[in-house]
Length: 385
Image (cartoon, rainbow, N blue to C red):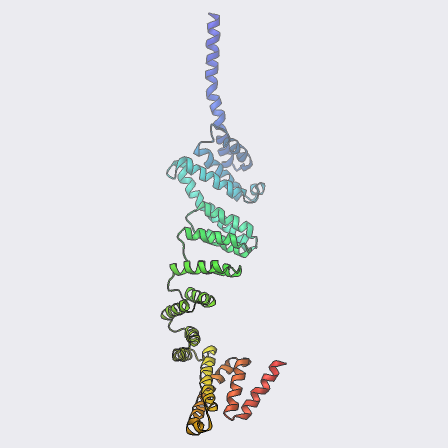
């Protein structure tokens, strides 16, 4: 009988001890809540840090939500905030609320509260990033922007600003990664493609620049800037016909752009399509009288026509010259006179342009305007000193 009594007594004692053990495991969370509400955040932190590593409480949403509250409270406290490492409060608050949502879903008792708390953390992370950027602490800014992006993965603003911060510290790889992340989020803007293009140019990566321009044109097929970039790349690579097709398209998109007509005129010049070239130069001047290239090239066109006429006359034998030589010289003089206003306007726009000075000086000489010719000749000598 005595032996049986002892066995029963031990069993009762063991059974009675179980509730106290479970209570011990959950008391850390309770103590953390009580200390947090009392403002004793250092003690609350100690309690809750124990609770999240205990197998009895680490899998409960309440535990993680409480941890988020404790660290967020410390973050906002001028006293307890000093006990945290830089960025620790935000990071641990985010981790805690994120874990809460994972355990409880967004619709659970604690999950709902955690979602609301996340919005506040996003604003704090973003503001920290802006302050760091303004202080030129670009690494800290990038870190905070990335945290803000993790808090709100669907938000594009933090990713965009992270790219700006990377550019500010000349981290083009980091900036490119952020811009491409935005593209992956279906975010598009002219500025984004422009920045990618500018970085490719800064790195002298022509292949990358060409790739970006083509991507930009897919997104913005009628954007004038991207069309001109594409055109310039074709011109630089010597793809004349390709460039002509692109400039025709650019003119349709921007018919008031004087420079486009001047460029196309030059292309026609290269192809010996003189009438088309002159028509474009005149259109360019009509749209913008101060277009130097168009004014100069119209002067050159008339100069060349005059030179051709005089050359034909000079190569005639005496009999032929007596019959028709004067006609060619008269024609040549007419073209020299026609070149004058274009060259004079070009010189007005660029007074020290040597090619214009030389051409106009020769025209003045051929027209017998010796004083004007000598004046330009004297200026040319000063430019060579």
